[in-house]
Length: 302
Length: 261
Image (tube, rainbow over all chains, first blue to last red; front, side, top):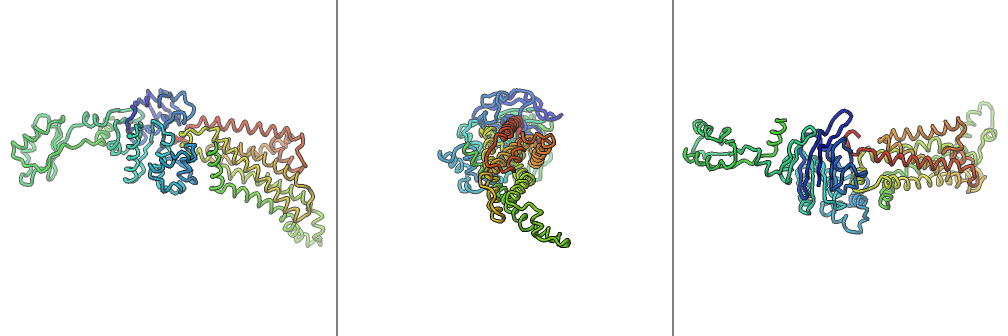
């Protein structure tokens, strides 16, 4: 759906994008992550046809950005970071205006229901909360029923309830068979709904991987163990653990300890060790690798 | 296009643009006869009182006729009306660019030509009607205070010519709005263009060939359109067409939604 090849963008002496590459497959939710100022919004503006690249090739929805004269020709659903509506229009009027449909087809009403704005559809948008505006923006993006959606930080400025609602709408879009590319710096959101992730840093793509693959590939698994209160943790036990082949580090807290190992499938070996030392265990779990850790790891490496 | 026109109508009504423009023009239209018939003679009388000059003598000094009153109001339209229009409508396009409200319509397929066309149509009709309505109000009220000296046809023609000049002003506002992307500078540049064209062409004695010539012709209160109007009309239409072309071309060049905008 999207192919970006060596995309560059200069702003008066500042290079915002320095040869960005990106591939978004049909039907997936693609999380575009990166620090503030990494170039996410610049890239998204170009992909939405709102800004022109300095160099590089961009194919969006099968069309080369260089050959399009108008953002509407790309036939995508676009939601800016801070969607601006006419404050003196109602939500219904806004969608009717954007769709060139005076409400006769029922499409506007359908979208108002889907976004949960049906009850507030005759209120002026100027009185809407940030979350309601964001939902209206997603509805506006869907109005022409495009196959591809590009959302710029759709949930960043919302409260937890608003965020959940926006994420639900994005998941709904995937169920409808749509492709969604969305940028964010909220990694929890990415972990919740994305199939694939692209991380941008200083205008370049750092990596582009499937979320599930990323969580297992780079991560050094950590096992959290809480011994029963009958078997106190002693230094010799932890030293013994540290000597085991494959163990990277052992960290101790007041009632538990964590074992960082080189690779997955270390649980059997660790359990055998605990049994041999007659350690009763209340809690034993493989800690899920958080995207945030990987993100920080990559940023620090950079 | 129908929905774009509806949108502009809603904007004009809900943001009070129609009320501001109509009320301002009507205010001057109704104030001028009162000023000339009641207030000014009293002020002058009190000033001449020391010199034993009678009120009747003051009236004789002043040109207090309906035609004089209407022409005085038409002068106000150029001097003050243009300022009111420029700053009431300076955000018509510039605010949309500055506030990024055009981003979603553009992404949903709205064309620049249609966006500008809808604005021209709605506000063009509005700016064509308001001078006619105000001049009629001035005509009726001044006739009531003075005496009716002319028929309604010269008034309709004069109002229409003022209205056509306002189309030139509207095109100016849209063009400067597209280039400046900020409402107040767009308003000031429109004023500078309108007054600049008026004074420079007046100095060069070519005013009758320019859009300003329409206002001069309007003030003559001729009972119909004369062949001498052809050149200023043609030049105005050409200037409007050129400005609309520049507006749309500039809109196509803008990079939308960027932080540098």
